[in-house]
Image (cartoon, rainbow, N blue to C red; front, side):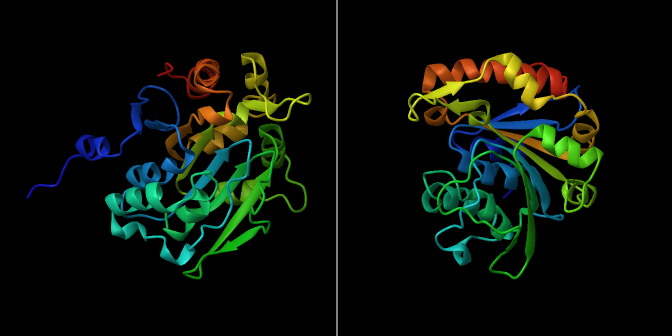
Length: 258
C-alpha cells in the first residue's frame, strides 16, 4: 500500500489548519488550531519521525509546563502521527497546560524558551526537566520578548537565551493568542484583548531584530493556538486573531496573513 502524501496525512489532524507561508522569512508552514494541546501532533507532523528534537520558542500568557499525569505513558515520536494525535486528544489535560513536557517526553522538543507572564498552579518550577527516558531539557523563562531580546543582545550572568538558540538546529515557534490579553483589574474573570499597537510593542520591541533573526533562521514551523475561551469568547478572539495576525504574519514573518 502506498503511503499517504503530506497533504492527505495532514487532513487527518482534525481541527488543525495548515497554512503555507512561502515568500516570507522563517517557516514555510503554519498550523492553526484552537486547543493548545493540538500543537503536539502539529509539531510531530512538521518535524517528521527523524532528526534531532527541536528547540521550542513559545509565547503565551501562561507557562504550560505542568507535568502530564502519566509521563511514562507518553508515546515516543517513533510511534507515529496517529498514535501521538490520539494520545493528545484523549490523554492530555483539557486545560491545555501539559503538552510541552509531553512533547519533551515524546522526543519532539529538546529545550524550550518560554516567553510567558503567569505560572499556573502545579506548573514545573525547575530550570531543567528530566524526562522519564532520562533526557535533560532546559527551560528558559522570560516574561517578555523585550527581555528575551536583551538577553540575546547583551547576555548577563545566568542568561541562557543565547545558549539555547545557538545550540538549536531546528526551532518550533509557537504562539498562544492569549499571550496578547490581560485580566481586568476590576474583574479577574474578564479578559481584555490588546489593541494592535500594544501587540506590536510586545512582539516587536525596539532592538528585537537580532533576536528574531536568530529565531526565524532556524524555525521550521509556526503553531498558533486561538484558545477562544482564554481570549474573551469566539467573537473577541476572532478580532484579536485579526489584529495579532497583521503583526505576526505581515510585520514579523513578512507574508500575507491567512
